[in-house]
Image 1 (tube, one colour):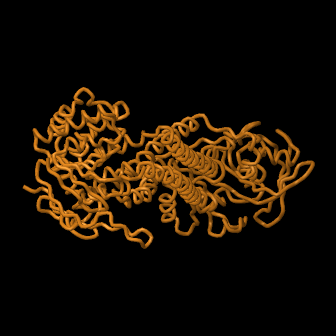
Image 2 (cartoon, rainbow over the protein chains, first blue to last red; image 1 turned 30 degrees about the horizontal axis):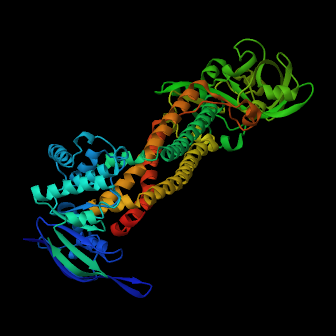
Length: 227
Length: 405
């Protein structure tokens, strides 16, 4: 069953009257439970594609349909709400809220969703256990290593029970051990809980783990390999 | 959650927040203390006007206040006085003979306002008795005593028990003179009053001028509450419609003006302080937004809608303002209360203050209205200061914001 359907997607940036096609006619679909990596050289359009799938950016042409909803047709507030309920984000720079503990960072999105305290507590504990940080639940980001912070970020991305996770270069700032650890956790979540992960990455270790590798060059898909 | 988040954000950069909170606290403190100080000065001046110079209400024949004409007088002052003393809230009342005339010593002479009073009533109506620095106040016995101000005594080069000659017009429009002996010397906070007003007994002036025993130019009424001046004036006016009844604000328009003008000045003063603080807070919050562009982009990406982002920035600003404001209010209240008990002695400006009728010891007066008004202004300042930085946060594009280093 397809969770994401991308049809004839284009994104053009008008740089001083010289149009740059960041995404140039991409048509793709993702099924529930995929563990997919979008790879390609810098400037190939990976992040732009991820931003459009995540509703953070608008396509110049084409549509992104998520579970039957055309996200690029949603208005600002509806889109924000849709993102909150359906999409989890993991960023390269972790982007945890520095004044919050690991627990509060994970809880935050559930607060935004209006979940009650019991539900928040239970899910936060489950998620931090799942990413192996149950013992660091009350630590602030500055007391956690880069790998630990990124694991909190994964737990946060999962907090709202999204339909899929978009991870933009999640291992770019991590050492080998942390990368291996993070990928194992995400793969486990994918296999055990059927959570869909879509990565944009340069990292061969991520590519090796991915069960589907989509290669993009100059804004177009040049290969789409399922392992 | 947003409010707790905003509160924690305030303390991300402790030094910067402490600086702006201190600025708000000092500004608020300055505002409150200045208001309390000014209130103290104004209240003291009004107290002097009422208790020493005028009393709450004065009654005259129409035209007397404008001309001080000796011939414009009440013939039945005693019966009026008797009725007024029975009115509620009247603490004391006394009749006065008021004549503009000359007083001369062996050395020199000068124009003064001679006020004839009945000593028993006079002591109750005015607190002049407590202002004596030498001698004693007018008594029922003794021959022609006079109480004069220290400045006039210096001007006339006389002291206690020295003689002065008072020259007045009698009822037949003849110039008559009487010798009086200085029984007491007073000093108030108003040098002009001290130099231009002398007090003698009514009975001595009656003898000198030939006035009838029930005649007087003025009846002064002292109340137990300043706020009742207007109401009581209206009551007396209704009782004696042919007489000119004025309260202290009408008798001393500059005092009435002082009260309303100071209120307006303080309102403007607080607004200027708050405006200055507004710009400081706006600058700080713009820096905050600029520093957190990346994070704000992330928050919008994960589902924090723009209204919540806007609310968060507004709350952070309001918390900064309120924390500083609360500190400033507490400091202002504490300092005002302390000095209200102990006074602030501006002795180095004593002469200058006395020239314009003010005491050099100021007892600040802090009231509930000032506290509420200042608190409301601080909250308003916080909200107004928040709008532009919050608007800047609102305008962020999540995609671009996330890519910002």
